[in-house]
Image (cartoon, rainbow, N blue to C red; front, side):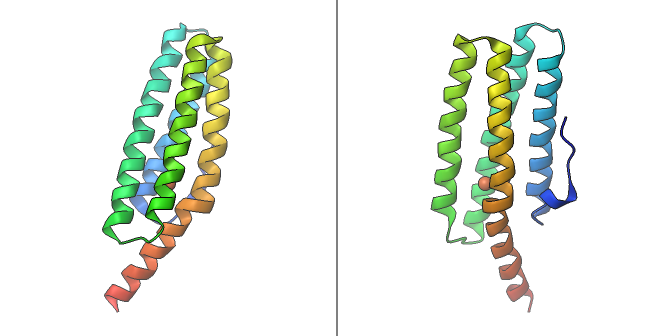
Length: 137
Ligand SMILES: [Fe+2]
Ligand SMILES: [Fe+2]
């Protein structure tokens, strides 16, 4: 299980809330991997995780666009590469042992997400915060 920590926040409350939900879905995946339930349940959680990742990326990219963030294209390309890798791993879950496959997805998504939030998302959050301060001044 993974606890949400204050240090994961980037200061954009909607995005922080969405990141927290992504962490919760990863915990749900953890629960389902460890529970003695049908493989179908793991697939359900993976589908929800996929859908929410899609939703979060689209929301985040729209936010960056609305603030004129100059690093949008580069950031969106990182999202895209990640989605390609997740799809590849999802295919492996179908063809491989479901629980082993799901563990790989969980490990990859968790590590990527933490690095991405702390190294990439934090950059647009700082940009927006500075721009918002200038607008108010
Ligand atoms: Fe992002
Ligand atoms: Fe994000």
